[in-house]
Structure formats: structure tokens, C-alpha cells
Length: 280
Image (cartoon, rainbow, N blue to C red; front, top):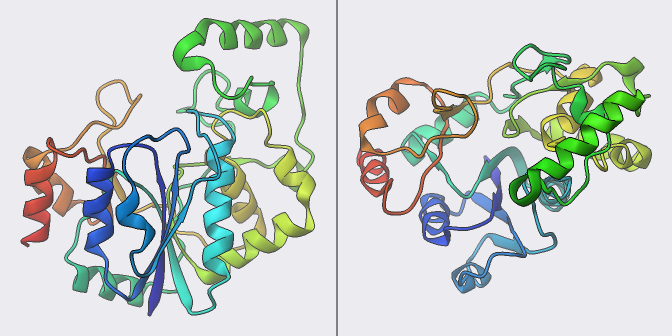
């Protein structure tokens, strides 16, 4: 079975190189590298079965990340040989040896691993995540350098009673972790709906972290069977805010998780961990 690995990458191309080199010729790699990245990416340009794109500058939380993901999906779906699709970041790494990875995907070739839950959801803040889509979020995101400004505009919108509404699927919205492993059927359903309903994608402009809502809402309302597990090992730390960088001390937990990928890896810090995973 031929598979597609869709990768959104921003930095640390040393780590990205380790990820890319894990896969063999049974995989096509589709990589979107943030236009802001100034690191040397020449090793990707002439690599077999590797397709590199640099279309968007991706700011945390802005819609360009969603656009980059949809670009990779479209390009990969055009290759009719591909039967299974994984979305990962450049700081992910497979947990199983390659042969076991292939065997698992072969056995689950019709399964769609997508974390999902209906919004509002208690883990997504006071508004249960509805604030992400109800208000206008200025983009590219100002939250890193000028977080006070974006949140001031949201506060004003709350006071004014702004509500952009959501006029698709009878207002039923779903969210979940960005990353997934899905069948060709799932990609086809998303491609077909977005192509026939361009207004659906337009609705996610000025939405916060749209990549955690857009496809989840579409798939959950499509009738596509979903397994509520994105098959990623992530340590969210004590505050649940950002993924913790993994190292060799996390090895036992990672292997015991039964997941397909671990996140997040960084070159140097995670090298011993990746060596352990490679030598299973």
C-alpha cells in the first residue's frame, strides 16, 4: 500500500531531515515549509518521492496553516496510487519500526483516526471554543508579539455582542487535534465538499486555529466513520498549553502509548530518543 505523509514544517530542518529519512519508496512526502524559514532546505529539493511547497507564511493560530494543510491534501490526492494519508509536523517522529508502521496502516487502511468532539467543549476555555469562530481574530496572529492587542479587540467584540454565526451543517461544529491519519475516502470527501462549497472555506478567515475546526466539522457531519483517537503521543505538560519537547526519558511512555507518531522532537534534545526508536 502506498501512503502519503503530509508535513507542515517551520524550523529545525535537522529534525525534519531525520523524519524524512525514516520513510522508504512506499511513501510520497508532501512538505509545506513556512516561507519565513531561512534554514537551508536544499536537501529536500531533489529527493525522490518528495514534494516541497513554500506558499504561505504561517503565524501561530492564523488561517494560513489551514491553507497549507489543504494544499498538501489536494496535491497528494491527485496521486491516485496513494491510499492512506497522515498529517504531521516536522517535529513528529514515528514510534514503531517501519515494517510495523506499514503493517498497522495496512490493517487499518479503511479507518480514520481523528480526534473529535462537539463544540462547545469544556477543555477549550470559557466559551468552549466558540470564541474562536464567533469573533474576528486579526491575522496574521498578533498574539505572540502583541497579544494584548488581539485580546483587547476580542473583549470589545464581546461587549458589542458580535457573533459571526455559522451557517453550515445546522450550526453543528466540531473540534479536535490538528493531526490525523485517514483513508483516501476521507480526503476525497473533504476535497469534494470544499470544491463545491468555497464559501465554507471562506468562513474560516479570521478564525483562531481554524485547522482544529474546519476538517473536523466537515468530517463529523459527513457520516464518515471516525475513530476518536489521532494516534499521536503528546505530553502537554502541567498547564496543557504547549507540547513538551521529548527526550530518551520519555521512551517507555511513548512505546507503551500504542500511537503512530510522537511529538514533539527537537534536534539535539531528542536525538537519543530517536536512536532508541530506530533500534527497536
